[in-house]
Length: 334
Image (spheres, rainbow, N blue to C red):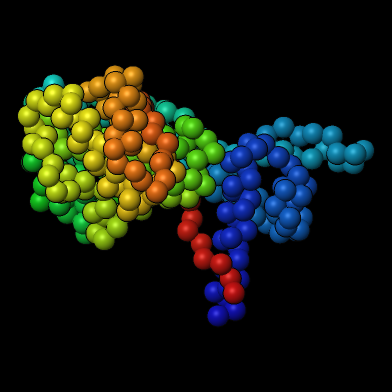
């Protein structure tokens, strides 16, 4: 037990140094000792290990109060990379986007491919090509319009993916950890990251894509709430929903959306609801929602924000979640 605790403490201290270096980029050992509140002896050992691994580089030497010049170390943001890949419907075809991102959230490469229908082997070939070009890829983040349960895609707007064990197959073939997130969860995460200061809030994200049913993401205090088997947010199963595959008039869309918000507000009471849609103008929506609230009193009224940045938020959120999965998940010592 004593050895296990010592090893865990070492990992916690390593991660402490790692997080500080990621934040400030360069530092000397005495600076790291001050910032991490670790002893100089401990920092010396940890820096030596991170340097040997290639996670830290030696940088410039700087004057040190009349003594020997101090060695500065620079963090290597390319030490671990993430491959972020997603599927998207584009004018009746399938767009596959693959992005390689480093620990500074810098995009190193981005490729997009458009194919008539989803092809499993083509998708795998893109992953294999990316890993061959960037061997430092240590995680694959996959965004899908659907939900995965125990490695199987249970729900998806791409019918050819429903029932697929694509995630499990990719994990086995490439021997890398896989993060899978649906599009709405990733988008509301990206919105919160882009806005800044949203981590302590309780938000819902609603996405109304063309010709497909809407989806919802629940974001509470910096985390996505997924529910049993990841199925929270499947609002297309609410009662009295229209046929989302048909053309919908503005009045029908507004009435349906207002009823959805009223239901969600009564059950979840969020601080803010972010709505991604392109069916009605902001002025029309605002007027209709204000009138709806007069007819349907509620205990509280969340802030409603209309956004047209779904794609940007989705990509930003998927990158952030993928990189976050690289951070060690360490338990505390008792």
